[in-house]
Length: 183
Length: 172
Image (cartoon, rainbow over all chains, first blue to last red; front, side, top):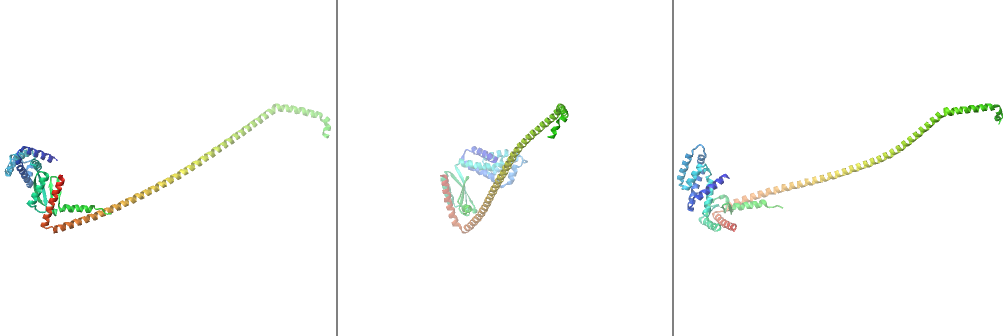
């Protein structure tokens, strides 16, 4: 709950500080890079969470990371503020909310498509065109391979899931058999 | 009669006898009769009082008898009422007990029926569950075995159409 509040507040502030919408993707990419670094390197989390390590050392580490990720001024400033306020561990939540804010400003929506095999370019573009027409937004498709689907695809747009997989159909069949009344 | 032929002989004797008798009578009347009469009156009065008391007692006894009879009758009636009430109460209790027993039997019957129904439903549910598991597992195995690349791609294309259609319907 607190994480969401903090994430939303900082994400909104960061979004408002960037006037040029073309820079939003770059900022998001940098934020994702930071998040990946924190998630893949548990030592980094322990470093920023450790109360015995000085603020100066943490600031220095942030500068190094920003240089390494070639982060812009906006991201650099925000990470430094987060480090000072000991909120750097809320970065994942901030990145998620920033992604939503950026998508809103860019009038785009992220769609996750899972299939049993890698989707062909033609299939992806068919989906993108159709969804763009239906939702009247720019569609960013992320594809995933999920063999447990058995066949077909599942599609997730925000909180909405459209499941056209064989796994789902078998699940419906199973429920139907289980619920069938015996006289 | 020969006795009266000698009155002349005994006239003085008769006279004195009469005089002495008179004197005796006067003396008796003056000194002896009053206490005797008084005693007799007292006795008479006492006898009268006793008779009156006896009569009163008899009447009281009669009255008491009537009262006792009435009391006895009342007691009999009360006893009869108590017996009747006891009888009614016993009957009522018997009926109540019978009703309770019947109700209990009905309840037990209902519970037994519900238990049987529950067990039956549970059993059917388990059978349906097994049947569903078996069906789905078999279908899954079959599909995995039979779905080659082409079929899989066809299925993906069909799913894409289906998803687009579903999204269109949701949007409308």
